[in-house]
Image (cartoon, rainbow over all chains, first blue to last red; front, side):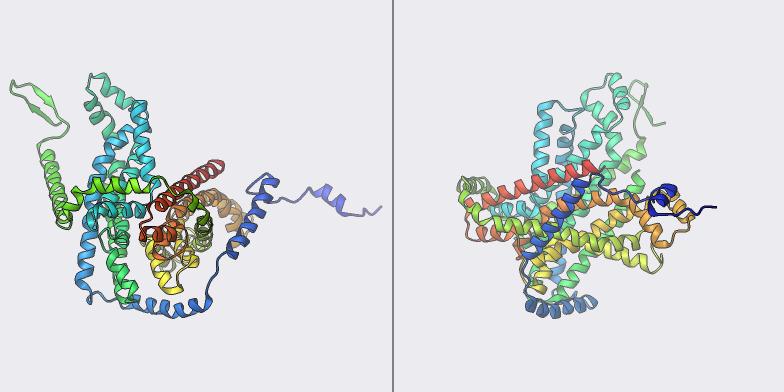
Length: 276
Length: 272
């Protein structure tokens, strides 16, 4: 009996090559270019950040104070400021959501290709794109420069931001709707308004309600920062608290923002379940 | 069926009966009342004289801002690079933190539903509900002004967002594949690497690019509170009322946002 010498090549031939995990990016050249490019970028990017470590170590003590402050927040020393700021934030959020919805419904209808003619579609899409491209804070700066300090600037900013968000998603929802139902309504000889009201609106209503409540949530969160540039709301109080290193007051404000957002999120969950 | 009779006694179809209609009207009444109250509050806090003056002011600012001061772009390349770094490194840092949080928060991979999952969910909610500008404000007062504060602010703000989307993706995975891997006698880690990770990798990539796009927008304004990037230049130009420079910076930001959105759309299109 002859002994078979199992060299590697023969072994491989008998067993077949071992299974290997396929790569996420299949093209090897693309994969390596991306990997090396990412590495080079990371090195360059980290190189351009200079951190003042002595300042950081000093700051860490302050950071620890903030963590401690979170454990016992001070709701009362600046109680009136906090209450007024928070109420103003809620008021801005509610009214800008209402106005934003009212404006974004016609724009959303206009931005849906299946019910709007091309010129209207282009204009409405343009408004949506403009509103989405500009950050709320930048709009708020301009609005404060134009309308003066106060909640009106914040209200206009948030309404403008709501239009971009809501009109875009509403338009996408209308474009995805079931055509058969809308056509059935049209076949009864309905006017354009009746067609929209009975053929289109019932189909998009649940989504519109869900999105509106979600946007109310976002608007409240945003209204908390608009105060930084003088557009009203709780942000101004928060900024002052940080500037004076009054971390216990800042912690109280942050906790109230988190609490309100959690309540809103819970409410929106309940309402969305009811609507759908 | 909701029907009513008109004057000649013919039955007419209605979408709702009387009680439903009344309830609806009552709801609308409350909504309008709330809105009017809010509007009254805003109106009381507004100096209307300034508002009536607004068109003139807007035209005035517009005329001062045009044309943008193009030569100022030379001073903007550094801040643009910083802004890009804040967004990109912030997203990377956020993803590194978000992955473990997501695995701890997903109900099918969490080690303990009673203790660990609520903590992970709390991390997600609390980081998500605070705007990145507020995080930046806090971090500037802790680690000092500069790019590092902005980077960490963006990272913390993004953790909740990425972890939320990621844990929802983990909860929706196909259990059959996990079972198949487990049946080969794989350990817990092997199940994770060969059963779970390949299923969530596409959504992971999608989420990271999506968040990167958002972070580009957010990092442009972080400079307003001293956290580095192009916002610093914006702030200082605004402070000296150099409107032509403001116009150029806004243009640059718009271009950056559009490029970011384009890249993100391309990458997501390639993945999905």
